[in-house]
Length: 153
Image 1 (tube, helix red, strand yellow):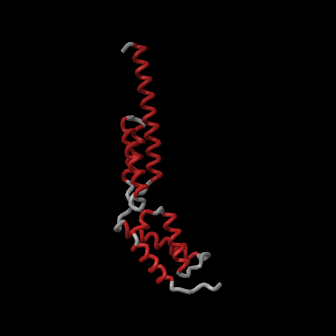
Image 2 (cartoon, rainbow, N blue to C red):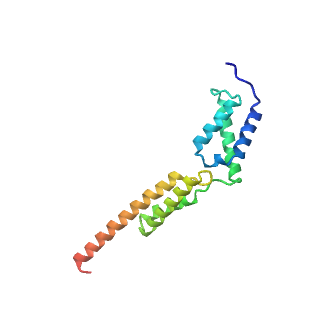
Image 3 (cartoon, helix red, strand yellow):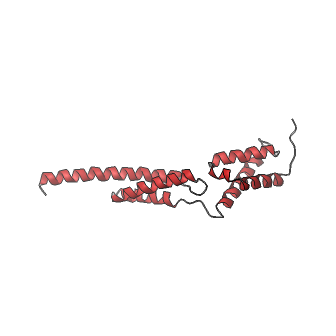
C-alpha cells in the first residue's frame, strides 16, 4: 500500500490546530496525548517507522502544552513543598504533617489537571518522608514518655 505524501509542516499545523481547539485533550495523561498526536500524524501521511514522526510528536506536544499553560511552566510548588517539609520533618516531626497534607493536595491537583500540575514522583517522595517522620516522631514521643515515667520526671 502506497502512503500518501503530505507536506510535513501542513500536517503538523493541522494536528496542532485540532489539539488546541478541543478542550477534551487537556485532561489526558502525557503518553495518551502523545499517542493520539502520533495517530493523527499517521492519518496525515507520516510513516510510522520514520524517525521524523517522533520528532513531530514531541514538537506538537510541547507546542500544545505551552499554549495550554499560556507560556508558563508546569506547577510543581506543592510537590516540592511536600518534599522539603518531609526532609525537615525527620528532625522536627510536626512538619511531617505539613508534608503529608501538601503531598496529598499535590497528588489531587496532579490527577485533576495534569497539564498544569506536575511532580507526582516528588509529591510521593514527600508523602513517604512525611509519614516516616510522623512515625518516628510518635515512636520517639512514646519512648520519651516511658523514660520520663521510669525516671519520675
